[in-house]
Image (tube, rainbow over the protein chains, first blue to last red):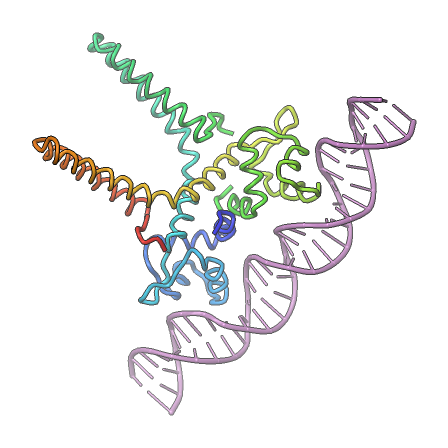
Length: 140
Length: 140
DNA sequence: GAGGCTTGTCAAGGATTGTTGACTTGCTGT
DNA sequence: ACAGCAAGTCAACAATCCTTGACAAGCCTC
């Protein structure tokens, strides 16, 4: 199953919700209906069919996410986490500035060490953030 | 833009390819056509429209991935990386077994230390893999 | 200025999707 | 035995998706 088939599977709001609900644990048909506030059985049946490759039925007859389902969930989460990576970068930067400032004021003889560690880490972290993860610092 | 809108955008193989090609750098309309081996302008136009929120036109008139585009790319990559997490777990486990075996044979007095480090790491890594990332060791 | 790329826009039509609501089948409690 | 719920299945229909192919500006270049 290629990635676009998975994205096709989670390209409907209801199906994303089904994945998220099933990530909590196995469920029966009626539980899903109740949890998702769906009246029509046909509708849930239609979308469960679309999730055929991501959702299995376990030996108790309950619907469960299979490995592909969890992979899809991870893709969903990767997308929603994306915005946080920029914030994490700023928080990290701020932490290092404060740390070095504190060291400078209280035990200045250690500054060369903490500064070197900070610089090394921020260099690697910047490379990872901007080049490997393609995060831009421009909010829009 | 909620995640299902993004997944709708990348739910077609051609659109995933467009994202992947544009991740390499800005491109003109005809470049995209050539790279993707598309004959019909209408077809490319249709799919670029669908990617409206993920692809922008820069000040040189070239198509570029914007932040949401990169977020979508990351979701695509997160999905395709998923299968490797199980393999990574086994490789890690194997590495620790070999290391401890080697320590046992050559410098057995260090074994308590390396064994403790291995156990700690594998405990944390197992927790992360199975509970946080929902990876299952069953291949199917 | 004619010819030929580039960069599109648009209409048409078949294929697919999403939704509803009626219907089935099997189980459970009384 | 019967009602009622669970767990679907199916037909029908509107909406939308995808693709093709025709067409139109706007440029270079000879």
